[in-house]
Every structure is written in structure tokens, then in C-alpha cells.
Image 1 (cartoon, rainbow, N blue to C red):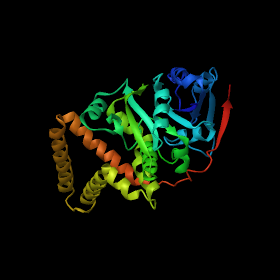
Image 2: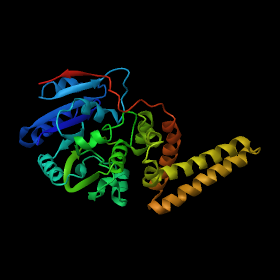
Image 3: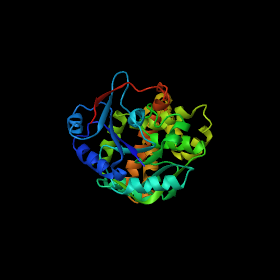
Image 4: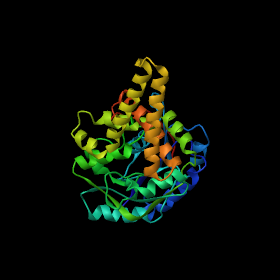
Length: 331
């Protein structure tokens, strides 16, 4: 069965050639297409893509880059009944698409199939996070989302209106997953490799700052806003316990600010705020098995909690609307 492979890119000149080559090699029987959905690259990405039998489409004003825009941008131009999502720094396993297509054909109630994302460049803190908890990307069998992408059935996507929400700077896979599952579809992760992922290696604190600047951290608030008034809102609140955590942390932030503003004795207010931070950091250090991980956890909480209301209050564009774009080339 032919597959439309959508590769989401933004300044991926270092890895895009390998990603396209693996995608072309992975098309079952060579049937299908490769679409590079670009969010406005300013490096050599377009020049490199032009050397391959691939179609490149790129957003234009007023469309803005986001984690959710690439998938939907590619979906607008995709021709085939199976849709494969990749990032521009991923190498597709050569035999995955054929197995995924066979699985979907045998299981008509399944909307999407994925596999393991083999991370090639993980920071120590991210590695610890992934192996010490039951992260969504580690589960096998029926899953609530397909982190890292996978192969989706077009009819399933059309039944829920759109592939990925252009308004989301994060949680776009979860948003898609909960919309599909609420419509009665299932998602499955096979116990085999889907892609190798060559992500950025970066200091974890710098990564937090970069994710704030790129608006990635706003995703939790944006996905909550997207669910308001929708049938899956209650389900979302149950399945994203981090929302409850961020609300508690927001309460802590508000309490600390109130003490600093309204307590007459400013030194006492500062001492209380610092003592509370130290107590929470020490508690998390004990739970995480080290000061470095405990301190990072608390700092990350503060970043994520602060981003929740910012993301929630951001204006939205109709996710079903055509994304303003142009086709750069086709072979």
C-alpha cells in the first residue's frame, strides 16, 4: 500500500539528507511519496531537498512555526491513504512501513501504528527520566499517543477533522491521540524500532530556556485550551496529571509572590520563600537520588507551571483552516 511520508523540518540541514534517503528506502515497494513540510527554514534545507525526488512545501505569512503545524501542512498535500510522520532528524527503519501497513490492514479499528524511537543523543538527565518512569515512548501495545510519529490511517484522521493542531507548540501527539481515541479509534506501538532519532545534545537548563523561547513549554496550556468545550476535556484532565501538578506549583509561585509583596518584613518574607524552595528541593533530591536531579526537577516545575497560563491564554486559529504555504519543488 502506498504511503505519504511527511517530514517536518525547521533548519535541519545537518540531518535532512539522511532522513530523506531513509524515507525513500522505506517506501513499501517504492510506492508513495515523500513530502518535506517546512516551517520556514533559513539554512540549506531547501537546497538539499531539491536534490531528491521529494516535494517540499513551506509555510508563508501569516502562518507561524509550531510543533503542530508541520504535520498538518504536509497532510494538506498528501495523496495516499497511509500517512507517516517523521521529524527532520530521524532515520526510518527500512522495513517498518510494510509491517505497519500490514498491521493496519489486519486491524481496521486501529488509527495508527508506531514503534520504538531509538534515541542516539540523549543528555544524562533525559536518559534518567526515560528509563526511570513508564514514559509514553517506552510502552508497547495499545498507547494513548504516538510520541515521535508513526503511521496513521487517513480515514481516521479525516474522521476527527485534522491531523495536527497548528496552534500547539507541544503535546501535538497527545492531542491527536485523545481526539482519535475519543472517536473510538485505537493506537498501537509494536515492539520493534520505528526510527533512530538524532536529537540535540544540550545542557538541561539551557534546554529549558530554549524550550521557553521556542514556546514549546506553552504546549500544555495550549492543549488544555484546545480541549475546552470538547467532549474529551474530562478525559484530558484525567490523563495529564502534570496539569494538576503545574496548578499546585502555580499556587506555590503565587504564595511566594504574595509573601514578598504583602509581608511588611521583607527579610522575613524572603527567608520564608527561600526556606520553602530549599525544603521542596531537598525533598525532591531525596526522591530522585541526587541533588542535581532534585534541583533540576524543581526548576523545571517552575518553568512548566509558569508556561501553563501563558499557553492557555494564547489566541487560536481554526486548526481545520488551510495553512498558508507554497510548494517549492517537486520531482
